[in-house]
Amino acid sequence: MRVIVCNDYDEMSKKAASLVASQITLKPNCVLGLATGSTPIGLYDNLVEMNQNGEIDFSSVTSFNLDEYYPLSPDNDQSYRYFMNLHLFDRVNIDKERTYVPNGLAEDAEAECAEYEKKIADHGGIDLQILGIGQNGHIGFNEPDENLISVTHLTGLTDNTIEANSRFFASIDDVPKKALTMGIGSILKAKRIILLASGKSKRRVVRELLNDNITTSIPATMLKVHPDVVLICDKDAYSEMYLGVDIGGTAIKLGVIDSFNNIVYKDSIPTQKNVTAKVIADDISAACKDIAARYPIGSIGIGTPGIINFEQETVSASNLPFDNSPIVEWIREETGLPVLINNDANCAALGEAIVGEGADENDIFMVTLGTGVGGGIIINKRIYSGKKGGAGEIGHMCIEADGKPCTCGSTGCWESYASVTALIEQTKAAAEENPDSILAKVIAENGKVDGKTVFEAMDKGCEVAEKVFDKYTSYIAVGIKNIVNIFRPGAVVIAGGISVVGDRLLKPIQSKVGTDVPIKISHLKNDAGMIGAALLGKDTRVL
Ligand code: F6R
Image (tube, rainbow, N blue to C red):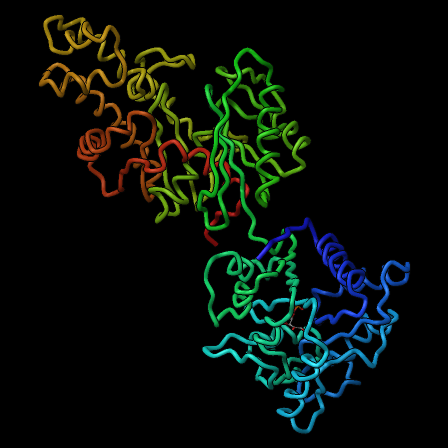
């Protein structure tokens, strides 16, 4: 099945009309299979216009409609014969004698169906079949069932269809409970098929058409066996995807998630050095445009370090050339897509809350232990940003009055004790105080100290390193205890480079915090920010 995703209903209708017009141009005496319902009305309007402009000629065309209510008179304004006259046959130069619709007043429904099937065959079969699709996956009136009938037949309508179609009737009681319909086999015999789907109500069923399953409980999936079917749908019917951009100092990660939050694509581009903010924004726009040409992207979400002015949608960041830069506006203008922005730590928290370790909880607190200590608060599956943004800056919570001076200008901030930068300082200080320790030797051998040094020394049995790490996890535990006391979230999730050591970090923290609130390690790792950024475009709330 080929898929054409159009921006809206008008574009979809025009596209379908151009394909029908080509069919008529290539074979003026072609046989068209036609559908009713609200979806093909735009297609018929376009065909009428083309006919009136002299672009297409219906004079030799034959048509067979898919179905008709039973029993219902063709004169009834709810009959499909009436619909077709109104929307197409009375407006184009088609010979009405060659327009066939099952007779809703036939005394012998079975004979009418057999004759209808034969008439289609006598005309050489259908060259091009137009189909709509029911929310329950029906085509024609082939309703979901264990057994689908191949040929034209009399069928009962499901409650779902009666309800969906009641919008055309004065009351639901007036909707006929039966219909005559071409069967699945009659439809599949058509040489080519155009299936139309528009609007959000068709999203679920369109999704089913795009996977590999064929099931009688969604009759339209039978179309997957046909060699020449094109699904033309608008963006509303096509399950929307979301693009996430995670801006980092060295790389910009981009990824697409589908409506089920699966990552369907991911990539990264380098963050250019010594360039302006506009150049970086242009790089992001170009990559986003490229992705949007391949996926039905509904929105772009951006996670960025630094400080965001949410009112003006500008960003300032110390490790990037962003200085009140309107990157949202730039990317929105270039891509033509809605663009949303949030802090990268918040995005990572959102990603973790929806598809990671917090997926079972509505409220989580995420702590990122890196160069600094970042935080993200998720309440009811949404980022809590505070009044003007900036909430969750947990790294600057004071854990020691008059403690170490912090880059923020304050003293005793948690990140001065619990960040990886702090661990490195603590490692260095302990080695200096204990020059004969294994730790000091490891440092001398490596010629440097980083976040791994303390683990390397512990692996070699160094007691000094054990003490450093014990103190470090105590600092982390103090902060997490505060978080638990203030928020009592469903879970606290720890992320950041050091979290790769897993239980070695987690177990001492859990035992020192001593709470029934689950403390976990992020499992999305580097993808959390990108996934969370993509999720900015989605309503993730639990309603
Ligand atoms: C109509 C038909 C039905 C409709 C389907 C969608 O002839 O066969 O299968 O195509 O019910 O209806 P709309 O377009 O109104 O959503």
